Image (cartoon, rainbow, N blue to C red):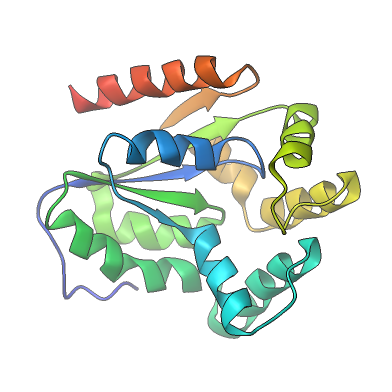
Length: 192
């Protein structure tokens, strides 16, 4: 369970989920550009890989994420993130958590923020996601087999369930300007 030291009575927490390369990072950038603070669960794994001085490759990020979950529980990243989000809520009305991947993480966040917590799923076709991976060049990206392995691992953590039960959904199979427009429309609706 999250440490309640910074429990705040105001503000909303939104977590974005989606399969790899669906557009979670773009969504986070769009919100960050409006002044909404973003904390990335993927950045937590990348920081762990760097801290351990490991060579970055498509397999190592998944291995480290899996090792952390095995050693500390499936909710380890969520528990580590709660107090940082609470601190941000002291000064912001909305905080975005980028990269929600597992049911255990959802359960921690939902229990901690209750009706102030919601989720949004970014949905994109597998082929579209693979083409994006080829263009973005992140160390954790690889070939089609690597994408399939990542998808299966994250689905094993409950990602498909999170996508299915998300409070909001945005399709991201088109171009970037269409996606930006959809995100802006969604943001305008929730800020009303």
